[in-house]
Image (cartoon, rainbow, N blue to C red; front, top):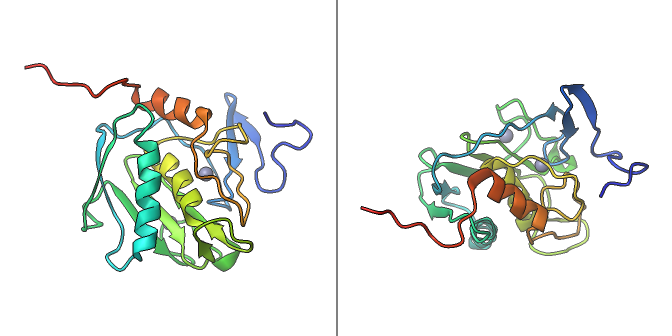
Length: 201
Ligand SMILES: [Zn+2]
Ligand SMILES: [Zn+2]
């Protein structure tokens, strides 16, 4: 739970502007306040793509993050393709003002942003000192990709500090496992199946 005295400090500012909808500032996005709707993909079969030149280790981190979202009772079928324009989930590294109205500010952040369905855009700030693991002064790429995929799939932020969808993240730390709160969120959005559904003909 958020301690009301210390909840939403510097990185996240809460404000109620209409009908009790809480808008928060996302340190992963930074700059603007935004609200995620309840949009979702209409299919659980989703293609994803990274640029062809992406390092294999980064591909592995992405696959690991995708698997975590696909292993919680929502049988997503994430299939890699190589045409990023055709993919449902388009992951790329971009720098500075990259044309979508959500500019990055060099190594000062934000780390990236994931836009809600059906956009499928997941931008990572290429000026961030990325790393794989808990390395001081760096940012763990799988931690950020896991969070951004939550947004890409349609989740908003959680007020549970242990959740991947908590809006805060610290340099040099990792959070690579979905919290029960994240799992409830994705099941609520897409429905829970305790086994794959078979079509009846
Ligand atoms: Zn962007
Ligand atoms: Zn976020």
